Length: 118
Image (cartoon, rainbow, N blue to C red; front, side, top):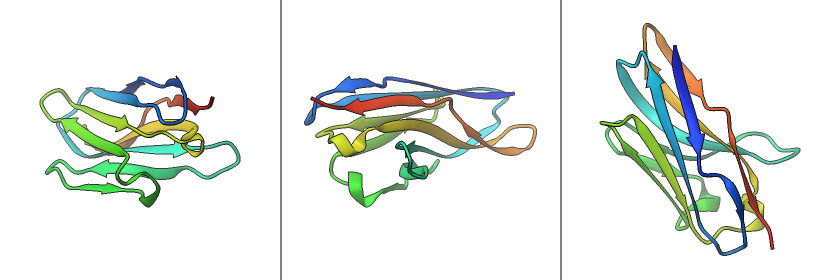
């Protein structure tokens, strides 16, 4: 069994910052790409940022220059530093990881709410 557990969501004013963290645990032989997705009410889930095991990073255009993704391969964690938050960043944020366990699987966290509002 593999679990992804997120933390760090909450309510923040426009222009503020939040840091999301995600820890992978269980029978993990190797972690490939790890990333963050988000889903706002009435919208489809979208990619926010992804980082490969080798450190290659891609961001959605809407968050470039404001969000930073990082990972700690020794701790099996991925983080998302979100700065200059805007109301349109409000969504449930999901951690995602491509994992080699007993089989190769794509795992999701339970989601954490981020609300940007004054």
